[in-house]
Image (cartoon, one colour):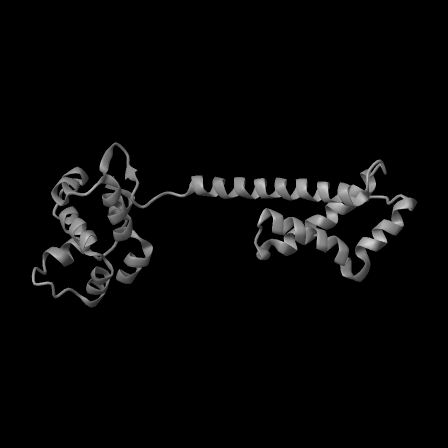
Length: 193
């Protein structure tokens, strides 16, 4: 980080902002964070950023307008830029994630979840136990599902295609997707591990 020289006429301003552990500077930061609806968990990151912006604002201030307004503008712009940068980073990470239900290759019926090695076979567990005396884990999993989700699961296991399941159960595509999401949700599936 470059060394910033503070003009003599700005030394009193710097002192007023940093008096009482930078209370005045952090008061402005708090107002901006509230306006931008940023979480309190980010507060210390933005305090650090504010210190950096403050020093550049002191250096670049031309006294044609009040310093308070100039500083507020500089902080607000920098915080918005920082939020944009953070959002880009999150989207970049999201693009790199892969769904376990995503089709692999040319065959839309083969998913990543189907090729992951595991000794538990839900289809075998459900189909080989017609009386419903499932293992404790499977029974607990099934108890978490709604009636419609169970019906979708049974038809899916029986080999029905999604359009056949929707037609058989008289449900919309969105209702079907919602059922599949619940059936595969980590909250429900984690019981089986």
